[in-house]
Image (tube, rainbow, N blue to C red):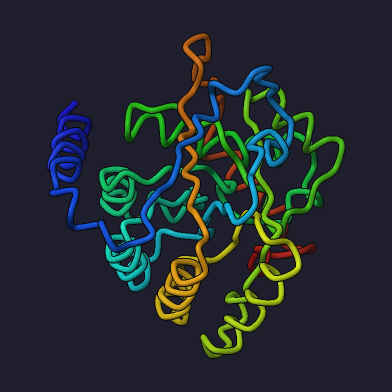
Length: 273
């Protein structure tokens, strides 16, 4: 309860900031509440349903929260008055719940990116189900909000994984403008990749990471370029429809151990994205 009150108070303070503070910044041009898209279809890719217009982009960041990078990313977003969607890894959320609350308190949306970030297309079905399900419940317990938006580790999908996403009442969002910041290249190199992607599409969902040291500088470059070139930011609000209920979790610790045992002879945690 206290956590929810704290989040609400910070949000009120941020909302009360003078409008002129963002007058010359890119800001947010419009908001798309994911839960209000009709028909709302769990398990479906929502990319097409957002209906981005020319020079409209959605900003997303994966793999946090990170104790060294996430706060710097938040500072860059605040500088440009931009809101983003953070696809966070469950086990990292559990180590820094304060950063999870701060991301939410500053008006950003939190989606899930599995608990362990293993390659779920390799795991047995029941382990993959648990790995996708657990962070949904964790976020609900931590923030009082039921997340409904999800991104597969490395974007790897199978029919079984689509079925899990559907059963959990989630929708998933891929990215189609990548920066390659996961390889820790200099920001200038990742920026060139971004220019290639956005130049080819003219709109899209930008994918970055808030656990890479080069990302804050890169993010500042990207947002500066978007501002100078007349692009607009679309912010996703991933509020669950009223009929949604948080999923039951079932066993926790035994399944976490089983995931690690199953992965001992197979693929480890997915490299970004």
